[in-house]
Image 1: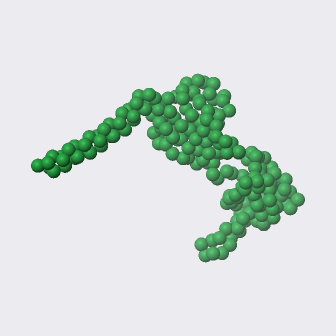
Image 2: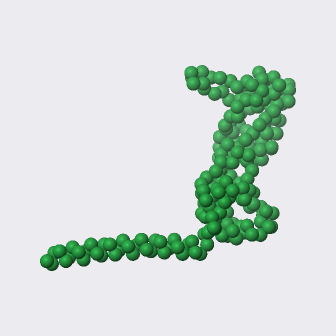
Image 3: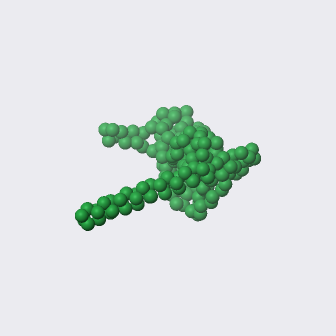
Length: 206
């Protein structure tokens, strides 16, 4: 929360402990963004204002809600900045750099997510990209997206949401090679054990 008079905004910003264990109040016109935990009921505990329900709101709606709550306390029009600090997505499967990525601008689409993971490998199926999304009730939904189809950008699943998982499916050749590799290792292990047993028996029989 900020405004042209920093002392008016000060009570509505959290205090931060300094290295010398002293509490310092951010009273600049552009205070450091504070983190608020949204509980299971969709509420946050805001200084002075108390409990505010922000669950289900967009960033703009949350900002406007807090502005409206602040107006009775401030003569000047307050400026409220809301950011989501734990907006993360995961990209796994046939990509160059699989992993979990934190999105700073709070908006990312499927192609941008693949770019962050170094793009698909030559073994990835562009017509069989899986999107795993969990709703508010904990139910998971798996959607297949075709990157070869231009209409995919019009899909409601093209823009990713928090905690989405993108899985790039491998082609048959890669899957077959993987199976062959596992089988080969198993056969080598079995053969090695068999040779050891035979050698032991030969030595005993001598």
